[in-house]
Image 1 (cartoon, rainbow, N blue to C red):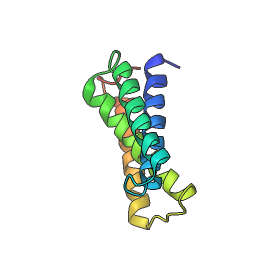
Image 2: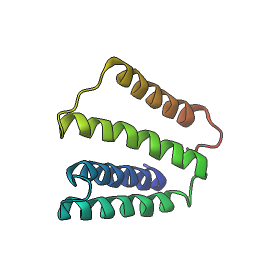
Image 3: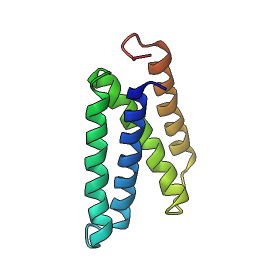
Length: 111
C-alpha cells in the first residue's frame, strides 16, 4: 500500500477518534474526552500534512473528509447507539461512490 494512503488512513482514524471524543466530552465539560478531542484533531491534521507531500490538496481533502464522515457515522452507530434513516444511508453511499470515482477515474488522484 502506498505510503500516502497510510497517512490518509491515519488522519481519518485520528479524526474519527477526535469527533467521537467530542460527543463524549459533553461540550468540553469532561476533561479526558476533551483532551482526546484536541489530540485526535491535531493528529488528524498532522497526518493530513504528510499525505499532502504526495497528493494534491483538493483530492486529499475530499478523500479525508469523505472517509471521515463515513467512519464517524459508523462510530455514532456502534459506539453511541445512534440510528441512521434511509436518507442518511443513501447520502453516505453517495459519498462513498464519489470517493470511488475520484480514485478510479481522476487523473489527479495518485495511484
